[in-house]
Structures are given as structure tokens and as C-alpha cells.
Image (cartoon, rainbow, N blue to C red; front, side):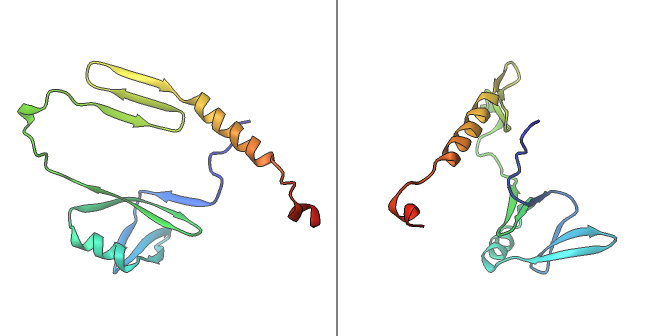
Length: 134
């Protein structure tokens, strides 16, 4: 059985949400919505630069994170570009490449080491005077 990667409740979405009147509007279905007010700083940033686009959000019990994108104009011309490289990073693999070569790195061993380390550290027990007094 494979372990779940989600350790706490969260919601991630990039579909059908909007920012309306300073609130994040999340569709619940059947024309029902949940509204989450955004703080003044976030609203100021989003309103100050109209080229910013909110692409997705992550909602946890204590935090709301917005993932934003911005289209930028390159400062160099296309004639000056000789090569472009792309990086795709996921939990269990890493791919790096361009038009002529793609290199794939399997990260399963790294994930396994992290899980084992977490299990080992979690099994440690304190044995100091405060614990013994209880």
C-alpha cells in the first residue's frame, strides 16, 4: 500500500474561481459559492499590476495561497537566443531538457529516504527530567 502524500486537509484548485469585490469566490456547485475575503496587502498587489493573473489557489485550515502568473516581455530579441532549457519537477522525478536532449532523474529513492528519516525522527522519545517527572 502506498502512503498518501497529503498529511493535512487542503484544497487546491485552478478551475472556475474568481476574485470578486475583494473576495475569493469558490464554486460549491448548483450556483452556490464560498467567499473568502482577501487581506488589504494582497488586494493592493493584485490591483497595482493588472498583468498579474491568479492561476490557482491552495486553501488549508490556516492559510490561503494564491499562485499568480505574469506575462513578461523579454529584454533580448529572439535573434539573440541560442538555446532554451526547460525543467519539470515533480515529487518522484525531475526532467531537464531542450529540443535536442531530455534528461530524466528518478527521485523515488529521495522520497523514500525522506519518509524513512521522518519515521525515525518521529520515533525518538525524550528522556529528560520533565518527562520523567510526569
